[in-house]
Length: 187
Image 1 (cartoon, one colour):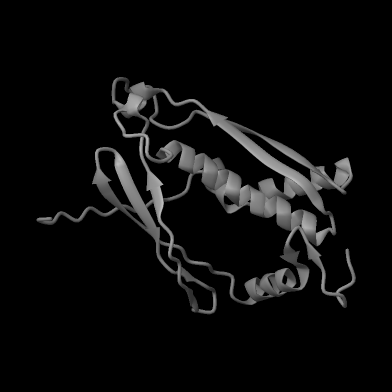
Image 2 (tube, helix red, strand yellow; image 1 turned 30 degrees about the horizontal axis):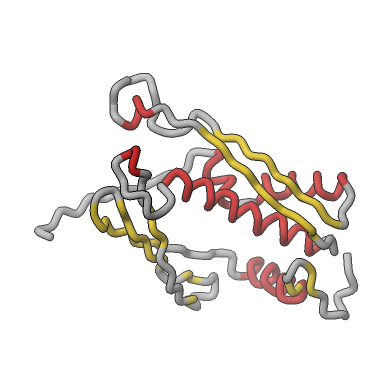
């Protein structure tokens, strides 16, 4: 570990601020997210994240638009990634945060980090053509390509830590409860 006295920036991360964030999480651990998605025609949709609610109740405004579509071969207009690509991108991006933070807190400067994720859906599940085929992935696989000043042992330690602590890795690796409510209106 690096000396806490010096201001240290590793992988564009201020380690002092990272330490403060970890200390705040010990006191106020909750982090709330919300996203609203609207259909925009054909198979297109537009999602807008709402504010992030910090553990202390503060709200962090978000002003982003996430577009989704399907390729023309799946009756879309090919204007944006499809939901499966966004799911994999969300997994990869979440794990990227873990790898970068894990390396930074160990004082390891990264030269490269790339995560490639793959999975195959069986459309018989989505189209309800089979009672025995689930609509989702039976499994996904990913490869992490990482390089930098760390040793193979340090990178293996970071890899294990990401698998143990990444929220999106956890969300996909275990079943999570989803509570759904249907509201029917005139519009």
